[in-house]
Amino acid sequence: MAIRIAVDAMGGDNAPAVVIDGAIRAVEESSDEIGVLLFGPADRVRDALQSAGASENSSIQIVDAPEVIQMDESPAAAVKTKQRSSIHLGLGAHKQGLADGFVSAGNTGAVMAASLFILGRIEGVARPCIIGFFPTISGVSIVLDIGANLDCKPEHLVQFARMGAVYAQAILGKESPTVGLLNVGEEPGKGNEQVKAAYELLANEPDITFRGNVEGRDLLHHAADVVVCDGFVGNVLLKFGESVASVFPRMLAEESARQNLSAEQQEVLRRVLGGVRRRFDYEEYGGAPLLGINGNVTIGHGGSTVRAISRMILTAAAEAKHNVAGAIRAAIAGRQPA
Image (tube, rainbow, N blue to C red):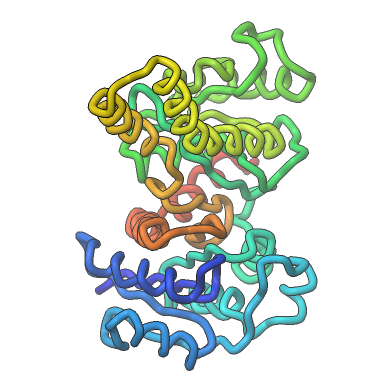
């Protein structure tokens, strides 16, 4: 049976055209059989689908969702008042088992709020969190939380570590994922009170392979497979990483001109930099999985391109295939008091 992913066709700055093109690409490129349910105003979505040279079939279907939550709307208000939106109805289909996952590049706050309201938290999960992907000299490290929880207790960071380890094992293929705690120094006594308390808790968790503190300068050296921090720190780190890809080309051009490099030399440098830059490109990973809820939800950047949407859908399909939510449920249940 095909894996079915509910897609917010109206989510993102360039919806629905870019979303529909991404859905078509995901279906074409997937190594598994997948189906896409496009949620949005039926006439608009159908017109965009036809403009893309496609039509409804067994792999791509349209589900009418007449209301749209705009990017600048209040998440709380939108979740309460627009219950026939593409976000609401897409998540509802996932809740009912009509879809195995949900993806949206729309209003992040609304997606998170609606996910909690419709799908609910996994029992025992105090704070759902969002994953960020960081390129390193040895594959990818995941960082969590990257913005869902600005203020965290030490035990929340431990739970993030456990959920992140489950994800790294299921999706990234890490047999025994290592965990690091983002901090201002390597020594156990470093950091604020929150981080020092979290260190003690993580060091005494027998089912977590804890590597200790990780400094910012060590992150890209792959200090650990999973790096935990609160959402405030994680979001600052994420935005800095995103800026790297956009600033490097300008720096390269300025330095090339200063050193009077030939056109041929500059072209070689551009190709090399392009390869490095792609590692920092969010499109490589598509979106950010929301962990800790009863389902598979992936949140995308508002400016997501066709490629990013496609990657989001394929990521959600992989999460469903490997039952990431079920694995997290089992991991959390095993740590609850009897």
